[in-house]
Structures are given as C-alpha cells and as structure tokens.
Image (cartoon, rainbow, N blue to C red; front, side, top):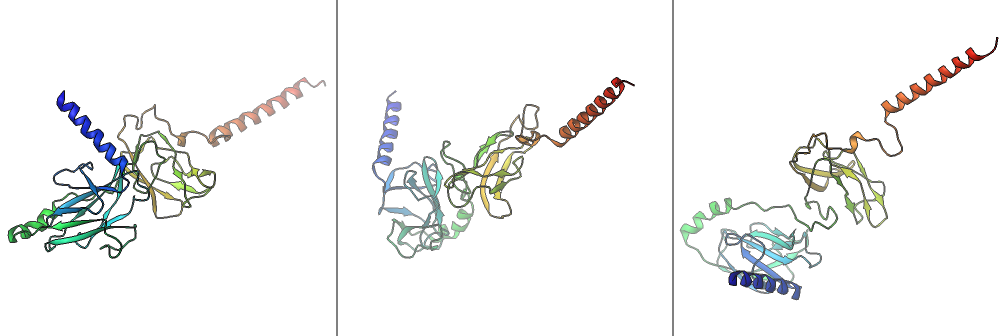
Length: 293
C-alpha cells in the first residue's frame, strides 16, 4: 500500500511539473528508459552522453507549434524530429561516434531548418564524454543495432484525423471515417483517394474546415494505407487497417455495395424500367380487349 501511494504521488507531482512550466523539456537515454516520461529538464540544462548514445528529447504536448520541428546539433548523426506521442512530444537523436569530448549546443529549428542548428539560441547542451579506443571502435556496431526512429505519431483519440501525414489511426473493415482538413491544403469539392476506401471521398463543408465521408473496404487487408489528393502524388494522411474478424464477413458492409443517396443502381433501374414498360404494354392490350366492336 505504501509503495502504491508513493508511486501515485510521484505521478501527480510529475503532472504538476508539466502543467507549471511551458518551457520545460525532458531528455533521457533511450537505452536506459525508452518511455517518454522522465525527470523534467529545464531549458538551458546540460545533458551527459557518450559517442554512439541515443537520446530522447521530450516536450509537453500542450506547447503549440512544436510538432514537426527538428532537434539539431553538430554532434548528432542526423537531426531528430519532434513528433506527437500523446501525452508528450518526443524526438530521438544519436551522438556521432567520432565526436570529440566537449560541450555542444542543441537547438530547435523549424521543419526546414539547418541540419546542424547553426544560429539561434541553444535550447539545451550535451556534454560528450571521452571514450577509449576499444569502445570507439565498437561504436559503429552499437549505432547500427539501435532501433530506427519511428515516424508514426500518436495524437489524442478525440482530435480530428489527420493532424499530420504521420498521424496514423487504426480503423476496422467497414468502419466509417471522417478525414478533416482545417487549413489551405483542401477545399470544397476536392477529392481524396486511398486503396483502402470504398471509393473517392469528396470534401464538403465551410471554407475553414472541410470534411469527407469515407468507409474502409470490407476486403481491405490489415496494414498501413496512404491517402492522397486525387491527381497528386504527395501522401496527405496514413491509417492502419486492423486485422478484424469483420473482414469479408457477411456482417461487414461498406458503401461500395450501397447506392448513392437519391440514385438507383443500374441493374435495379433497368429492372424497374422493364417492369414499367411491360406494365404499359399490358395496360394497352387490356384496353383494346375491353373496347367495344
């Protein structure tokens, strides 16, 4: 019981720290603790790392405009990208194996900022330790064994989809979805296409926010799918279709098998026309038979 209360108090204290400071950041060694929650690290703080070490930088999710920014330094093999990982925003970067010992600044830049973060005020700094010749020789193998950066983002479930091209949500076969655009990337009447949709999804709504109605195909296999604007090559959104018992089952219904509102499918329309024609002919014959001679 004491341990449970202590753990709960620690979680509560961490939540209060997150809410108290909009300038708070976090960083942890991913090898020690891969989860994004860690001891708060104030902006301007100094981190310690060794060549070949991978760091995860974490910001509170309520800070606006951080998603998609890059975390850069001359000591990183490649810049890290801040991605939503609800309830925080995280970026991963690895210290290069040939980094000499010393203290190096780390900066945040926009999505198209310089790879090494030249210019601007440092966000935090990294103190790189010296390592022996044997450890430095083994460093490239250590880096090669590190897990690759995960591009998928995880946004709150109650937020509209997609918030970014890597805002990957999971849907079931036959499920209705509502792609939403709230910027200049879409307009009324624009069309979305995806191999997992039953057809094209047409955007409707006001100028500021437009939405489309789409349905996941009943025969869509599990996996990652892409969404594009009709006639375009750039990926606008991604989603994952879950491995579901509803796939290809009689209970699964998608709009590909349903008529559009106010329209009659061709086979039904042809049958109706044929019946109507037959009815007219029968009526004419009946009238001729009843006509007095």
